[in-house]
Image (tube, rainbow over all chains, first blue to last red; front, side, top):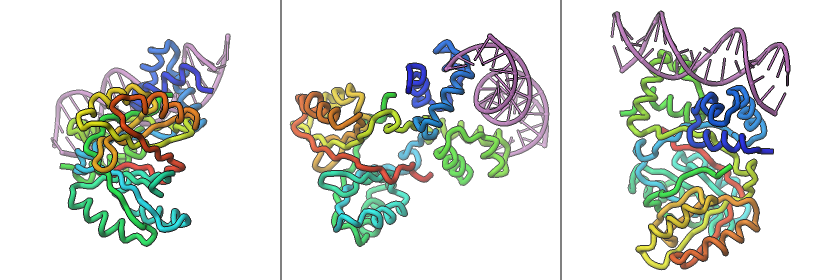
Length: 148
Length: 148
DNA sequence: ACTGAAAGGTAAAAGGG
DNA sequence: CCCTTTTACCTTTCAGT
């Protein structure tokens, strides 16, 4: 199982993936090699699934972020609809959900015009899609990872 | 502006933040020092905002992920409500949105019972919250970053 | 703005308690 | 399971083009 040292390592690396093992080791009064072993263990256990740089969508020119709730025509339409959504680079996340929507997707677009075109020309033309509802995100005041 | 080399670097590091500059350099036939300079430039420009290890919520025991749409009583209630949401460690993302919800939050909980208690004991008791609607995420078939 | 070489630091692997 | 040591690789810096 995950002990306290593992939790400390995860918290530190969630915040900055390039924190040196030496630094984490010093903070926890163990050797850098121990940190290395623990990180490998967490990776093999599937707790750590990867590392990534976080980029600012805004700085890359994507000024608008939204959630789009998609209602499909039929229950069996998920796989086909998903493949078509995957082909849209603006779609960064997709969730199968209970409740009023069949699929909830998160997208980034450069501007309102791009959003409009995405909805009309590439989302609402998907056969399996019955209707969509757009929630524009005005601000994202909380963005963090789950606590280990 | 961001040129082609910058895009290659970002794509590589979005996928794996620990890819060595030496490897990216070889792929793009430049020197490792150039990659280093470019990464620093992207960081200063705010394009790269950080690096993080990605952890599996499931492996950490959080088997349920949901979105909760929150409707507030009054327009001016955002800041107070947000502070109370921030105090809940299960809330990992929050968005101010247009549309039917005032705030959309993403949460992780360990099980259905924890979700139930979160809703009743800690969300619906917030003064500013008028009502909530829960969308349980059954699966997240798409999870990626925006293309540079 | 990129390169090449030098210096320092880090990760990864091996061996021992 | 953790430590120390070792080796090889990597980042970072800086003078030069």
